Each structure stands twice: as C-alpha cells, then as structure tokens.
Image 1 (spheres, rainbow, N blue to C red):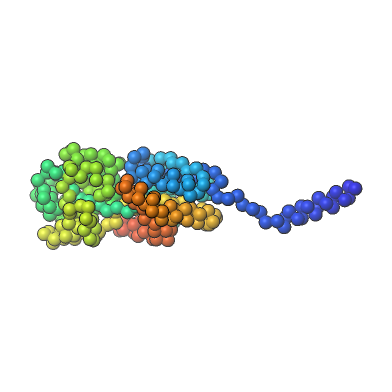
Image 2 (cartoon, helix red, strand yellow):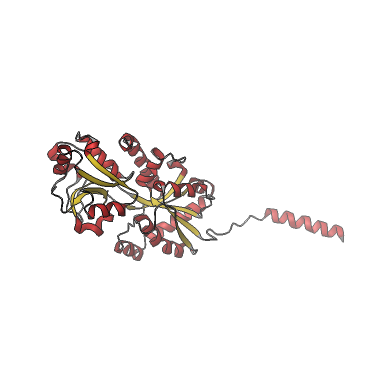
Length: 327
C-alpha cells in the first residue's frame, strides 16, 4: 500500500509540473496613480478625473496620491523605487519638468528609465501682462525692459518652458538678464496670482491655467506656430517682427502617464493592459465630453509617440541648458 501511495504521489507531482501555471488576472489589487504635483493643479485634476474611469475599465480600485516637490523629482524617485509590477503609475506634467530634473536637478534617472503610456494633455505658453500695465505689444514690452533696467518684473514657474522662453527673448533681443526682475515660483497658481494682483508686470506660463484670470490679463503673444482662437494674441514670432528677431517655438506642457521601464520589459502584458485601458477610456464620447467640460485634455498618442516627444523635449532643454543656470 505504501508503494502504491508513493507511486501515486510521484505521478501527481509529475502531472502538476506539466500543467501550465495560470497567472492571476492583472490587476488583482488597487493601482496607485502618483501625481508629481500638489492637489488642485492641472496634473492632479487630470489624474483624479481619469482615476474613476480607469477603475471602471480595469475593474479594480484606482487611488491617487500626491508626491509634490523638487520639480516632480520626488514623485519620479518614488515610482523608480516602487516595485516595477504595474501597480504604481506616474501621473505628471512630464514636459518640461522631467527634462529639467535630469539636466539641472541632479536626478539619477533618465528618460529611458520610464515607459510612457500616453500623452493626454498638451498646452502652449502665453505671454501676458497685467491689464493695467501700459505695454500693448511684446515688442513694446521688450523695448521697455531694454531701456529701463530693473524697472520691469516677470513671473515664471521655475524650470518651465515659460521660464526658458523669457530667457530666450532676452538673449535673442540683446537684453542683459539683469535688466529684468525675474521672479520664479514653484507653482503656476502662485505665479498667476502675482500677475493678476499686479505684483509683477507680466507672466510667461501655460495658457490653459490662465482661463481663470483672463479678466486681469492683456495677452501679448502665444508660443505657437498658428494662432489659437481662444486667445486674442499673435503667435510669438509674429509679435517679434517689429524687432526683427525670432525665437524657437518651444513645446509647452505635456501631461500624461508612465510606469517604471521595467514594467514594460518584465511584464509586457500588464503594460499593454494599461495602454489599452487608457485608449478605451479616452475613446469614450462621454469621457471626452466630461474632460472637455472641465478644461482637461483627452488625447491618446500612445506609448511610442509619447516616448519620442519626451526625448525631443529633453534635447531642446539640454540645448539651451546654459540659459537656465542661475547667475
């Protein structure tokens, strides 16, 4: 009898070895979206709006946590240190902040250390004065900065495309940087409050967030190739024609979602599940209507396009890195 039991046991073990292991369906536990900014900002609003839709699509709880600080580097490091299993997703305004944390912030990661899922929300920058200031054109404003050293002030978000644009405008128009009192902020809300309240003369910042202070602004230029119908402002190089100068049309903010690169490498099926979930959610007409009604982008570019956009953004900011060094 003992020999029969041993033979049965060995046969059962051998049979089990032949049966393929069935992996648990992903996700089998809550997914965490880690936002690189504080509560209430554009990236946070995008993430919280998407969380409920993604939860329905993934049939799993999706929670949102905020890890603000160091120009999104705290959140990026958190994602890099978390298990690369697909349960931690980075949600942020990736461009230009990720590039700047690498170029100027001493970040230990690179663009290739992340696998980007989608670029959902694009924005362009706007250059605008407080409506009570006397400047009626960008050329007039730049001339005033040149002729009145130290008299004019501007608000920008530290490390943003708007920050770089102001430096490019000064450089390409032969205006010493010391002529402008450039005030840097760690949040767009504070920078916008400064120009709306008249504490600074003008601002260079993403246009979308300026809707709420439109009544306090006089837009002078949009950093675009073609005009935007929502803002009565010439495109940047049209506004510079009276001065005979040009600047590169910098890409504005790119907000979206990413995971640790090892998720795509070691769990390609999980990465693909996330990509498909985002694509399905953003193809829903009801979701698009909701996002549009809340001034939130709803594009689906997919992983390859976003990875390319992030590399291009890094190359641009690396090219002009000397202009962003504090002197």
